Image 1 (cartoon, one colour):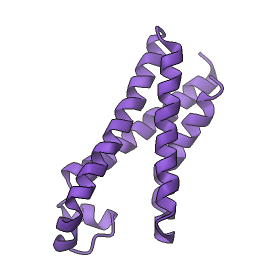
Image 2 (cartoon, rainbow, N blue to C red):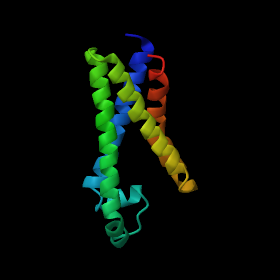
Image 3 (cartoon, rainbow, N blue to C red):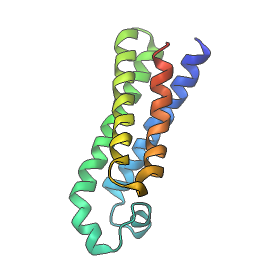
Length: 130
């Protein structure tokens, strides 16, 4: 296995774990004040208003993480290399695109977008050469 494949796999795995963490925050721990601080939610009323959207968005993040994980599983299994690469490229592209969209919502979202999008972008770029 090449160094590019190993580094790319680590980046994709970390991106998947980050998206699972975001799922936990948005869909499981949303009503906790520690989560509100992460998302700049002012109070319980605002959190309650945003709760359905956050819950739904959290599952989007989980599904992307599952897709990336499944792609890595297939990649290391070796039986379906084209499917593995396609799944990894698709899910990391979606993660990176979501981060780009996040930057369009205001200057305050640049840092979260960089956190959310850097690892998948690295994984995507490296898997282009695997």
